[in-house]
Length: 360
Image 1 (spheres, rainbow, N blue to C red):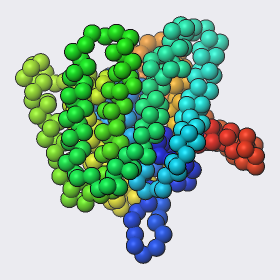
Image 2: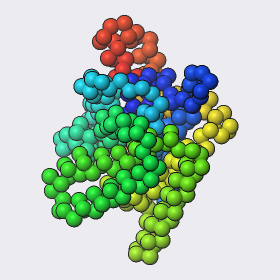
Image 3: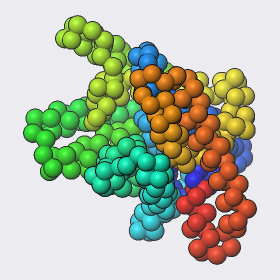
Image 4: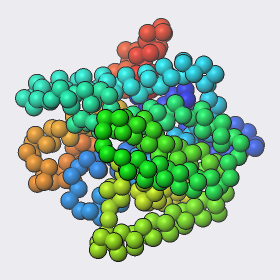
């Protein structure tokens, strides 16, 4: 598959375009660079980083991916007149690849003498738990279903402050649900409502980015920086120490999002700089940025392999672990993409479906 996207009907060559009144829009290679940053941070998070500073620094990865999806959706026409067909397309691009990978992953684990419980297997296929972090795919799938709605809202030119209204409402929803005891019902509602509304805020943020001037983008970044600093001071006073935003990630609160959006807006502000544009032209970065889903899935095989090799997530060399997982996921995806392009020609409906599943 291509990148982890929630926008509609994109091929691996599709990219958001820079706005121009003088002719056709040009491909924005910097978006691949931003996806490259996002997937790099995600894999880094699974490398057992011993330094809290580094772990906190990369803790904007999933919101960045959702933000990019909202941004990209506003740069393309959405083929969503038939919502059933649109939903099935999302299933083929996100859900089916994940289930195929999970099946292979569990077969490898069981074959290597590392059994997995039935509960973990069920939670994994439902994308709500288990040894593989496929909850990210669940979020992206639901965001893809909400993308046409967000596009329609954004075309009405939502005022810039609307994002803060969404975030405040999200905070109130989370506060309300935290007053309930944890039961199967509350957990189900949290997964289907709370998490989806939380990341809907980020999807909206990405969609309105197209309407913001560079000055407004900087103002947003400063605003989230101030909010983040205020939270740091509040928690330092309350807990007598620094609090990682990771603790407020499940479900994501304003403290978690304030840092994530600060980092995301900063990356979008600098994405048009010449240095970033030059880096974005690198073919390796372009490949990684346009194949993030399968790289994300495959890297879990190597996470498990490193755990088996080093026997402990506490003592392994995290730099080596990061390189193994990153290179392993990328090389496997590259080989897969070559094989798919060679043997699946998209001449029939079945071939087109297979191509969509394995390349996006």
